[in-house]
Image (cartoon, rainbow, N blue to C red; front, side):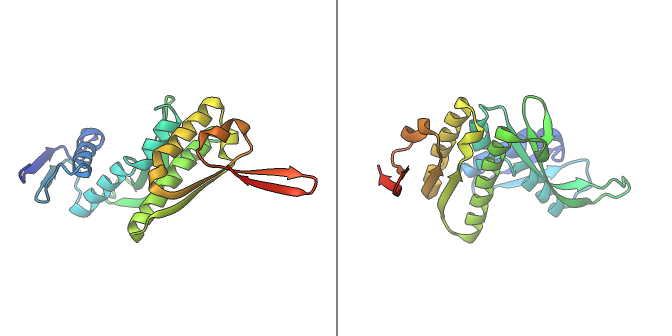
Length: 209
């Protein structure tokens, strides 16, 4: 592909946010855009380059691992978005304030992160923590060594447990080791290797299978 310039009219609008910018992001992630590619945007909002780049980072914040995992865990019914900038209540101000709000979308609509509990909250937490750990590892130039999941399966129904196993398999290549701690017998055969701890009258017996 030759170097080219993409011109987006309405670059600050919803179509750009939902369709155009994510599409360009996916092309770049797939190596389909050259180093000489340029993107020029025109919009109604009076944003400078730094503000627009900040908005793009916000729009793309939920387009990687967190949403892939959350969609797998929820059967495609949930997605997450990080809001890092917001307008002031004072409408006379044209700049944006810094914030960090986590918005979760599902079949009901969009709700704040704090509105979720139980099994839903675990699925959201699992996806977000995976994504944040990957971002921090990338910034440090290191590989993620170990993922530990302690009793997370207990909050899920049978279908939720199966989806969690699928999500773990989805990200297993990103970690050197994944350790799952659970008391649920039906999950014994979900993973190729396991350590079983059995309580006896003389203490605990450990067996590697």
